[in-house]
Length: 101
Image (cartoon, rainbow, N blue to C red; front, top):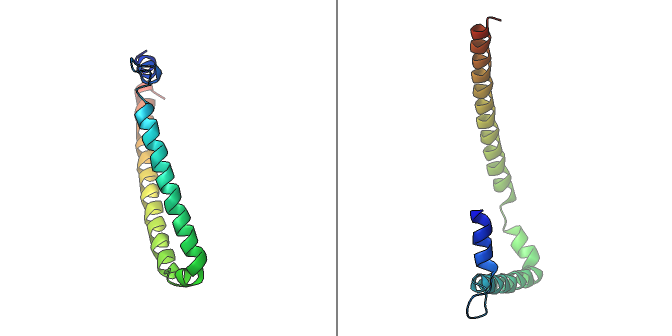
């Protein structure tokens, strides 16, 4: 109910004939226009200096860092899953004992 009321208040026209969300939407539009200009500028620069810029990217170092990060993340997920499975088995054992199975 509260979500519907809030949405109605945002999109209903106010006394001045504008919707309360209009300033937010126009701000988003200006931000998108600004981002588009930046992207065009960056794309133009890459077009002009593409090869030189690509040579400056430390790809091997990035690959190594990402590999280490993914390995650590995988180990942490494995540990968390192992702990959850252990706790679940323990809870199942307790329930079986309680039920006399």
